[in-house]
Length: 227
Ligand code: DX5
Ligand code: ZN
Image 1 (cartoon, rainbow, N blue to C red):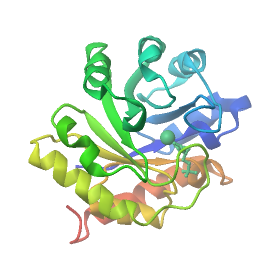
Image 2 (cartoon, rainbow, N blue to C red; image 1 turned 30 degrees about the vertical axis):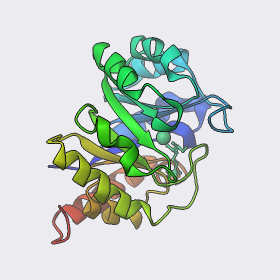
Image 3 (cartoon, rainbow, N blue to C red; image 1 turned 60 degrees about the vertical axis):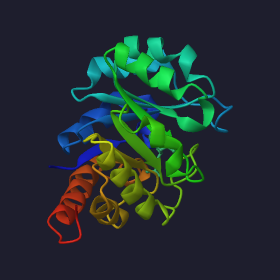
Image 4 (cartoon, helix red, strand yellow; image 1 turned 90 degrees about the horizontal axis):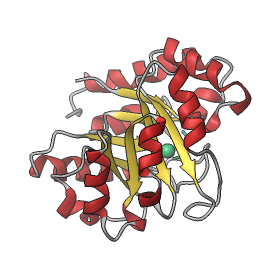
């Protein structure tokens, strides 16, 4: 088992997005994480399906689309068509989460469910066998460059245990404040997809930062506390 690195383009320069994606791919990025924000569910506004479609044309790795929007049901078809390989939706906005997750899967896209820092793991209990992956937010969504919330470490362990009890080998993803210090800790807790924005793109060399983050994450797999 390896750890997948998903650079978040939120912290990249949108004027040269193609170059940013090429750099992290050279550094070993496994996925490209695209943060979709609507100015309602979160205060910030980012990109929609046309930008995902353009990214899809230049990316060599799958697109991991994180929907931070109040009404994901209205847009999942459009993001699937634009080229999302993975799509995650927030449990906080979906009273019919079961229907949404299965609608995403029916489009041939991997379906993930996201938990905000204040959302308890139990919110996922009835969906543990259905999801393809779970994204644990380790900051409050909306912006890059925030500080990792330490409680997220034990939350990753709880989510991993919940999936294991359901017989689901789907991966736990983590997003927010991931860098070379926090990466080994969350990997030891069971996270296997690490999203990182500022730790990669707010450095002089995003290619190298991707490579170093991956090495830091992989080092925790060898440690005795890693699952
Ligand atoms: C935050 C987004 C993240 C963000 C992470 O709402 O979901 O993907 O880009 O940024 P860093 O890695 O800087 O915390
Ligand atoms: Zn994200």
